[in-house]
Length: 382
Image (cartoon, rainbow, N blue to C red; front, side):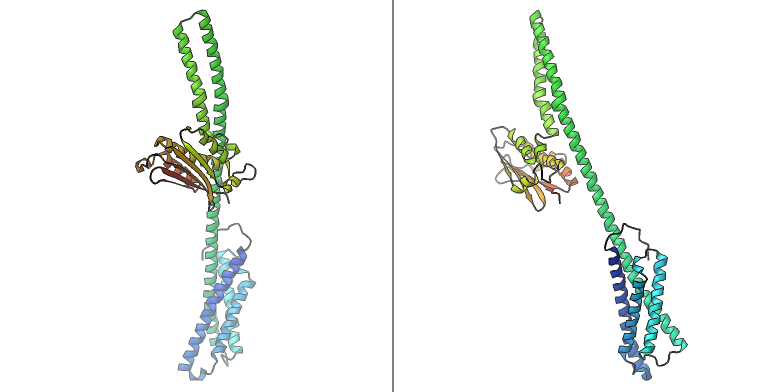
């Protein structure tokens, strides 16, 4: 028998150990006893005619008494509470000794033996101790096995919870960093670019008033236009990529804002299941900011595919909740899906790796007669 590493006890652990120990020990001991009784009755009737009149039921009853004694002693000594190997061995032998003594006395009381000499008593006692010890040892082994399995399962549960908590912490940190950088780009950087543009306007004005080189003024005007483009398009677009617009209001507003920026030549449609609206409620919903961000990334990837591999005249975004999962799908009617572009370095492959961390999945399949459907499934909170 192996010692089991201690684990934090829970309600019901002792009851489980008790049931396994007592039931297994009792069943094994009863099986040994009944089998021995039937064997003895046959041997005596066949080879020792003088003992053939001993009832087989008396033999079985004696062994039932032994089983009751064995189980009773294991219960009284609370062996199912012990964890020490030495204590378990001692308890097993003590219970077996009591059970064997009770069996021998029951045999005498029920007439199995008319006279019990010392030699017969010793043989019956030793045989009973051996059988009782084996039965109890099997019960202890079963209890210890149950404990080991329980410890392993709880260790696996703890590790799974720790991994989930670490992942949630990483997601929260990612969201925080993205929001701070996006706010910095949208606020601080854009503000500085506005100030730079204002100074350029002043410099250009002074050059014009002083009759400076027209080429210098033209160059400064070009710089000002480029900075304005950077401020209006590049910085703002980068800010949206880092932290989608209206994400704090919910997934649906963020996706609607994303779809609204598509060219007007593309027919767009957003369908949202009522369950998703309830889950996405800013006050009472269960979707986290990290889950919303990941869902928006799925829509961005689907829209990017439609624009990049198009031309697409129609894009449909679907938000649904089925079987405990948030389903985000983007369909387009562009060019037929090119399987060669679904490589390990593509955006969809990177998105699949990201979803795998949260036990989600993503699929990209062709539609008939043309177009493709990108579908991602994210587990919803319990």
